[in-house]
Picture: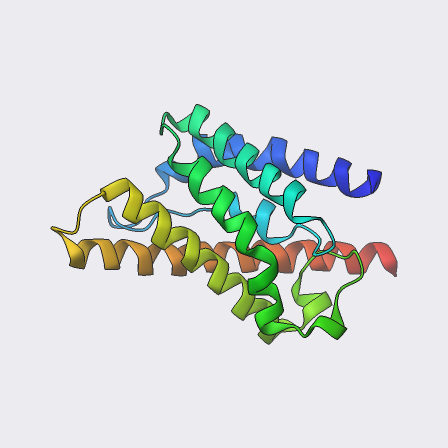
Length: 174
């Protein structure tokens, strides 16, 4: 457990400032925002309890709200995403194939299941954050475009991060 705590503390300390300083300004076509910090919530081990994962989701969103000056938007969306993490995971992986403490990854789950899991999680977050942020449906096309474009942009970046970390894990084990 200490190993996971140290790993996620380091990832937290790297991704939250990186999201606020770099990725929030890497907007494509004034529509797509990369939400790379979601890697924290997506890769939490499945065996982490709902209370702890929800607290970590809230903490992640709260810290991002502090850095980005978005009062409560990210805290709300990250908390709901962390709560929905386990049911979404079990949509693509049966209860019998639980990862026994390992983090969800393409190596642990298989590429297809992990891609579906990650895409669903990113889509849930993007839909929530942009709907709450807009708080209106007057520009429905722009809302749908922002959700779809940000989901695709984030998915590509998160999958690249997972592939890079998977190669690193494989080189350490060899």
